[in-house]
Structure formats: structure tokens, C-alpha cells
Amino acid sequence: MISVQPGSGPTVLRILLGSQLRGLREARGITREEAGYAIRASGSKISRMELGRVGFKERDVVDLLEMYGVSDETERVTLVALARQANSPGWWHKYGDVLPDWFQVYVGLEEAAALIRLYEVQFVPGLLQTADYARAVVALGQPGASAEEVERRVSLRIARQELLSKAGAPRLWAVVDEAALRRPIGGGEVMRAQLERLIEMTKEPNITLQLVPFSSGGHAAEGGAFTILRFPEVDLPDVVYVEQLTSSLYLDKRDDVERYTEVMERLSVESESPEHTTEILSGMLEEVGR
Image (tube, rainbow, N blue to C red; front, side, top):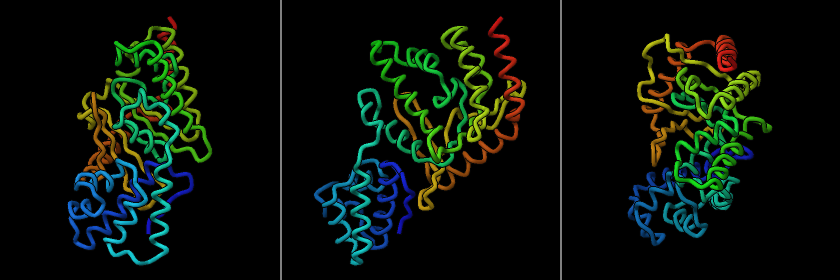
């Protein structure tokens, strides 16, 4: 049976339930197409369900459990109840007007993670941005957006940051390229406030920040920015998130995760220490203030 941590978000619950259903289907030698036929759907719908990309109808789960030969009443009740919990909307759904479907999945995973390790090369990580810095970044990425839409996107970004200060907050370990901190986003005042925010955040016990200096030359992360998410649920593998311009990749195959984890470990070793990173940030702050 799957193990669910208290407070797990609907995204994680869907992935856990989908994984369990996939295991049951494969154990019976049933194809996705055959399973889809049983619930009046396609094989691709079964694939999306098993990946946790869509919600679950309780009737579909009951029918699939019947097809997969699950006769244990306790197991059936547990899985159907999990489907019911997984369908509850997350807080971020109210931002659906500015939140693409492919990013909704990430916000849900981020909300449930125990450890977030990321490498960023272009901007300060979203979880560490000030509102003014976020506003400047959004305006760059959405040049045709109305003032109202920009503010909605900024509000979403600030709301995401609340997870870092909640009870049971995840650990954030961010490795940031020096270029992201040297790039004058929003002007001098915005950058000063952003650097001050970063210095303050490095004092938080659950936040580690490391700088990849220009002087290090080339490094392991030639592929660009990425995030590795780890969860308290033992049944849920680490997930690598790679964002693209209009979509994203979610990688959970062991070989992929191990490759990205290896790169992250090398970056952490090659980057400035957290203590020296804070000193460098203070030096940058003095430079911006001139």
C-alpha cells in the first residue's frame, strides 16, 4: 500500500494513486487500451491518470479496481478515498487564469516537497524574489500582458513563497549563477531590495544559497536551469523539473534523476560556500548602492 504524509497536496495524491493503479494493471498484464475501454475512455487517458496529470472519478477507480482483481475491501476503500482527496483543488487553482496547466503540476509538487534543489542561470529563483523584482521579470516575459494580469502573476509568485515559512517548511537549496545576480532587472532600487532580501533569506535555517562565480568558468550544468524535488512519501520518486518557453518536462526515471542529481552535487561542490556567498552578496549590494 502507498504511504501518504499528512498535508500532502492533491498533485502528490494523484501521482501516488496513479502509480498504484499502474502497478495493479501491469501485475494483471492488462494494456492501457483494455483498461481505458473498461471506463469508457482511451489508453491515453489511462496514461494521464497513471502519471497523475488528471483528476480521478471515483466510479472509474472502482471499475478499474474491479478489473484489476482487487478484492481486499480495505485496499479498495483506501484507494477510493485517496481518489476523493486527490480531487480537492489546491489553493493555486484560483490563479487558473494566469497559471498554465503544465505549471499547475509543478506548483502542486513544490507545495508537497520536503527538499527543493534548484539551479538558476538567468533570474533570482521565484521563491526568493521580491514583489518588485517579480513584477519586472513578469513584464519581460509577458510584454503584452495588462497591468491586472501582471499583478495576478506577481501575487501567485508571492503566494508560492509562503511555503518556506509554514510549519514543516521544505528545505530550499538554491545554486544561482552570478549572471542572474549581476543582471540589472528592474533598475538599481529593485536590485538593491532584491539583494537585501537574499541576504536576509540566507539567515533562515531551511534555506541554503550558493553562488556560481564567473571565475569558475564552465561547469556541469551546461543544459541550463532545472529543479529537483524530493518528497516525504516513500512511494514517490524524486522529480526533475525543466521549464521551457511554452511547456515543461517532468522526469522521474531513475537514470534521468541520477544524472541531474550528479550535476547538482558537482555544482554544489564547485560553487562558493553559503558563507562566502553571503559575503559576495553584501559586496554586490555595496556596488549597486554607489
